[in-house]
Every structure is written in structure tokens, then in C-alpha cells.
Image (cartoon, rainbow, N blue to C red; front, side, top):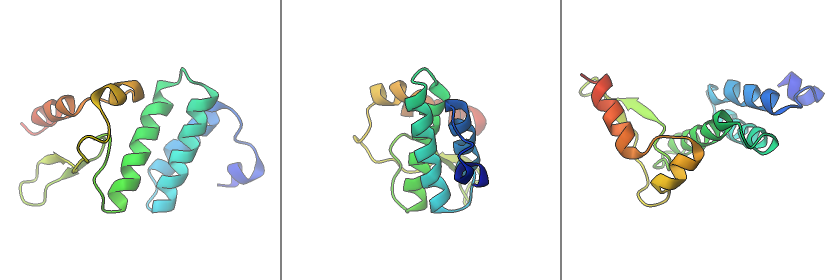
Length: 120
């Protein structure tokens, strides 16, 4: 936060790195700041796919923290009942698979296939 306040976050990489730190914060405000920073990073460098992915991750984190369904399908949770990883509920039809691909995140079917692999 000190680097942001002092104006020392300037490049796309700086904004991405700051976003990554805040993405792993504990509060809704951390997730919101991560989304803003990742968005700036992707605007400064439109070729930075990691920044686009992080934008989707941060948006989904905001939605899950608000107790709402996620849009992109980037957030997984461990079931207390089964001990297996599950896809946090998604809002159907809000984001298409083409939009997911454009953001660099997997389709919901790809996420489900990944879950099948890690839950073996």
C-alpha cells in the first residue's frame, strides 16, 4: 500500500504484482483493489494475459466474498462434507466460454475436468 500511495507503482508489471498481492488479501477491499490494479495492468499492457486472468480471478473473488455466484468459474472450494474440491457456484449465462477464453481462463467444462483429476 505504501508503494501505491507513494506513486512508485507505474508499469504494467508493477500494477500486476500489486494486484497479485492484494488478490491474496483477506478483505473485500483487498479483492476490489486487486481487480482495479489488474485492470490497469491489462490496459497498460494488453498483451499481458496474466493480468486478464487476474482480473477474472479478482472479480470472482469479489462475488464469492459477497456470497454471490461467481461469473468466470475461477474459484474452487473444498467441500466440508466430502473433502473434495468443488467449483464455487457460478451464475449461468452471465459469461460465455468465448468470454472466458478471451480473459485467458478455462471454460467451465475444462474446470470440471480439472476437478475430476485433482479429486481422484
